[in-house]
Image 1 (cartoon, rainbow, N blue to C red):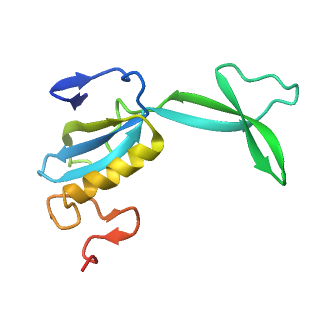
Image 2: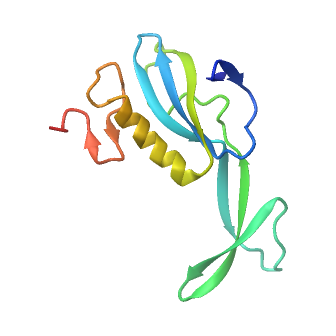
Length: 143
């Protein structure tokens, strides 16, 4: 099953986007809203010979008062097969994978996920399986 965005299947990463906000619908009618990045980044210490790893971007991080070089390697995530971070019984199959919005940056992705969770009132609606928003607001404990 592929992701659907604006009525069309999303099979390739749209140029210029970091990730997306999604809504999953399960066979029992329950829904879940979350976010997913198109790429996974791995940060490794720079090679001792000073060369940048193939396909990596060189960055510097402050460590002990000095800037230390690191290589950031980016690879495509498992977004195509992803079915959410929520653990559900095996008989509870995902029947719809809907992309609500594409986001250009990591920060905007997190902001829009929280925005969607509040907009859909996931903590107040029993049809949603989300248990909290930003680890601060919890289902059953918001009044």
